[in-house]
Image (tube, rainbow, N blue to C red):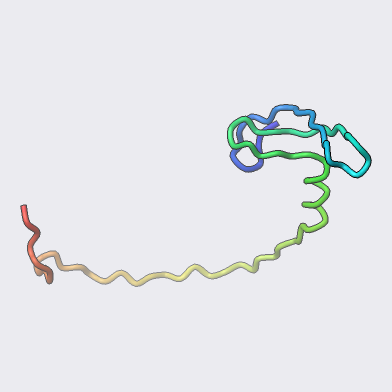
Length: 81
């Protein structure tokens, strides 16, 4: 499995919640060894609840007019050597 943030290697990890309302509770998840990102069932559930479909209308790309540049005249001070 690869990390969704950095595409690094995700390792299987078993975690224990010592402060859970039902006492100690073991959970299973994944942790990236590159950036430390954690992914488990709770994270995926919350992402699915708050995910919104984005519809992006096609946009016209503005075409910039290119004017001719004259390298003969410099309007600044000469640089020191």
